[in-house]
Length: 231
Image (cartoon, rainbow, N blue to C red; front, side):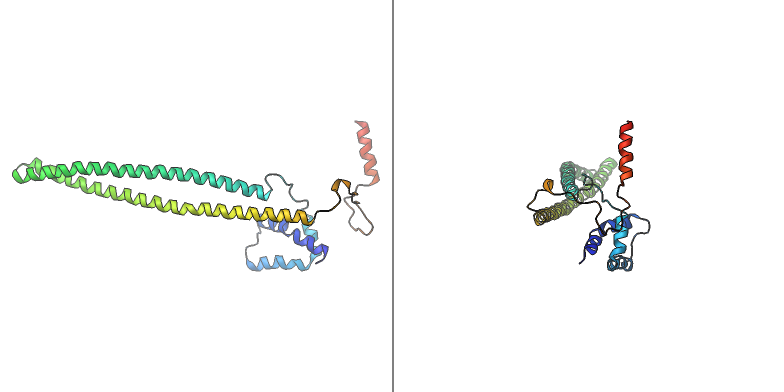
């Protein structure tokens, strides 16, 4: 692989980001294949990539590991908040079931009383009415109790599903560890015996360069010095 092909491959991520953010994004596999097939023309890639150069500065908003650390930290915090709310709801549902059981015990006592009274005094309409109303009340309590039990079961299912949140966090942390390991490896791979501060600075323009539009001329330097003198 030549240097131009390597530059084109390294700048490919920048070009793909611009394509994604534009209105004419690559949507079909054929268009994606067409983009990657352009690597066969490294000069065209170099020209298009240089239009988006330099890349974004390494601020906190652009550091990949920094952002992934924020994601795992916030994800863990939000998951903890969700579990706390789920626990509160689960406790409320449990307390609701206890209250219903206590009320049902009272209604069962009323049913036994009014059943006896209705049997002894069948002509008393009030006993018959109370017996019917308590029977309906017990049926409604049975329905509410079933709803609370179903809600408790749903809460348990939610807690089981939330376990995947922790699994996803662990996967992201594994990616972070791999990225950090690769970063350390690359730093060691490109390390040298000479300190960077002791190296000779690179020439801006050397013989054979064809593009020198960005080079500051002597006239520009003199004009800049003259402007400082005026100040």
